Length: 120
Image 1 (cartoon, rainbow, N blue to C red):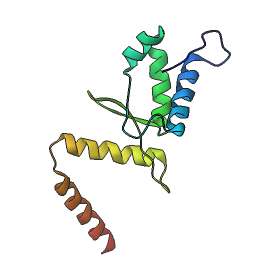
Image 2 (cartoon, rainbow, N blue to C red):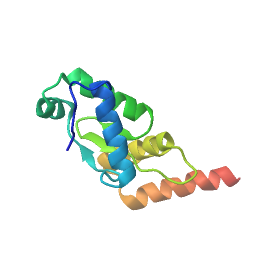
Image 3 (cartoon, one colour):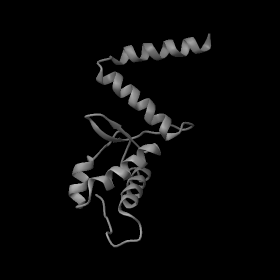
Image 4 (cartoon, rainbow, N blue to C red):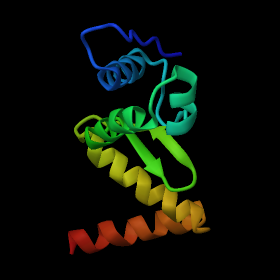
């Protein structure tokens, strides 16, 4: 999936970061697609896991991906008018609620309460 030029001018973590951004922009990677783990991608590319971690941290900081503990790294979704980081944060909250066993209707009811309180 990734092509890394070990002799190139661009650092390895920047190559990984820019390729993931291009894959997202091209639609190859879609919202909520799972990315390889840091360890597996590092082994696949024959590089230090810290290099992959640095690329993933920068991508997460810029809202392209999000991490769920013990679940993995996923592509963020974006919504027009919202920053990718805002969407990523909202997705993390919703995924946590889902993992905690909240039913879809329970989450919707909670959202309706929040929006009702906002209009009062």
